[in-house]
Length: 234
Image (cartoon, rainbow, N blue to C red; front, side, top):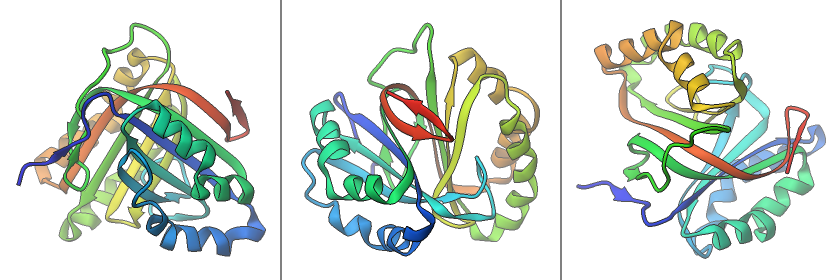
């Protein structure tokens, strides 16, 4: 069956939050049940309510407080209404010590996520920040081999020049993982992607067929708002 496409000027949204220590039961309930509040949201074509890793990228250790949301909307107006007015986002704001949201337009994409593809809607920017989303469904029989390499990639990302921040998110521990990153420029992202431990990990993934499905997308980020890792946006 052909993959569905979120095409025609679609706007993606990434939300990251760090739940207050005293509100973690609420946060856990949102991770389990928040998705059931989303069908029927105007203009929402695709969504994932996400857990988060303790560290900045793919990781074995889940975070007890960090969560995320990724969605694709028809247009800016639908994305703005969701970020500003939806019950899920209001709840995250009220119960979090940090809340960050950014709108995204695709300029490069390959692969799919639960059968959904994201075709490019913008040209590659000549300057300024970019964002990237790398996600994968890891084959259970190959998970142990994959995770032997992950710590090296993690350390290289943390020290990468031009990386503004990285956040590990995912649908399920160990097997369905993603990393969202923000970079100062395309050149900085390329320098990281084409060298060191990350390059070796890419080669190993292709050689060993670690993933049953994967997607890598580069975005032009805009209208960022909130606070993440003690830095204010918007």
